[in-house]
Image 1 (cartoon, rainbow, N blue to C red):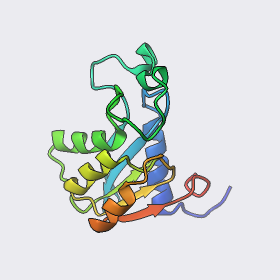
Image 2: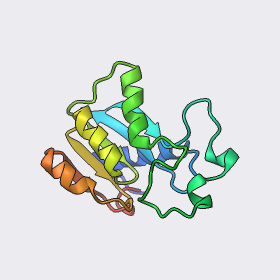
Image 3: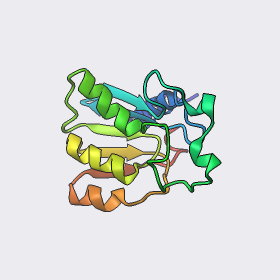
Image 4: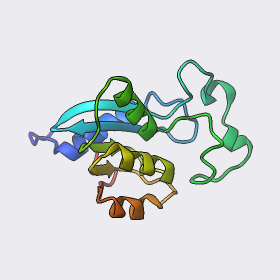
Length: 154
């Protein structure tokens, strides 16, 4: 066991990993944490809207229809982790402007657009999602992006 202190980015990515454990998605368990000044503002994981049946109970629509990952995101019961991190902040009156979002996966293009409008300044992930369109959008919006390989984030 090391006496070294875990750096901030891997620390919050680990927390996002724990948040992902609440996911009700059968394909990808994704967790997100919004942070500013080393303080957690909001968390989110992917799953069905509150109070509705989820994929663990009903099965995955995307698997049943053999839809490849990274395509046709609208055919899914789940709200993405990044969407939930924004929604939870909004429900509690917490602005996300200038924050960093740590997420276990990179965002789909729809979530990336929402993160831009939420005013985040940085996005850090340890895993990859098949939709890479966020990269140009983040660059154009001046959102800094960092990828920390899973081995370094554990």
